[in-house]
Length: 135
Image (cartoon, rainbow, N blue to C red):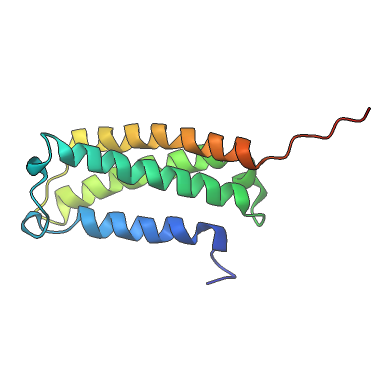
């Protein structure tokens, strides 16, 4: 796995698998979301993609194998998250008949993706060493 998949992206891959499993479980196997507040499900979708965006952008930024991914980590992370969110909704609609594809879930995924960019830039700002000034 080391040669094919950069180690900096392992957490993102694990998170992708977690999202897939949880989003495709039978609703009867999940706790009732309405216990917390109305539309808690949308909040969960947003959190899933908030975390995924950060993990992907950070992984792309830290890896050194693919230069374009390192230069444009947010662009690639955003594209992957939006594509994956749409794919999950299509799978729910067409494959897992006990689930339903929902535009509002995809919108929640997109909002989580957009918000997930913020902590990446904070992380990048904290970890980037400023250029030393020559006096």
